[in-house]
Amino acid sequence: MEKLTEVLAQKLSMGGYAAYVWPSFAVAAIVLIAMVIASLRSLRKAQHTLSELQNLPRNET
Image 1 (cartoon, one colour):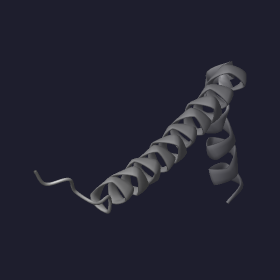
Image 2 (cartoon, rainbow, N blue to C red):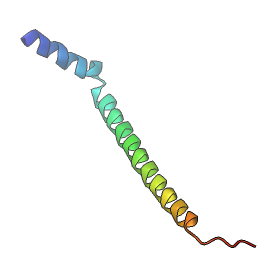
Image 3 (cartoon, rainbow, N blue to C red):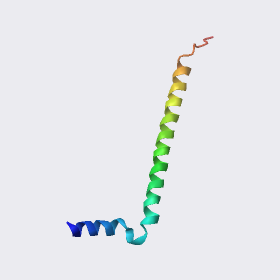
């Protein structure tokens, strides 16, 4: 079990570059999540606008 812990710690340290790799992953994940949230909000707004436009009375001439 101790060997497994050492191997896992060694892999997670990324050969000494963990201070750069893990924050980069975190920033990328935050940006992707923010983009999904912004896209969903934009979609809901567009659907609401479309619904309002479809419910407007039509002027038939």
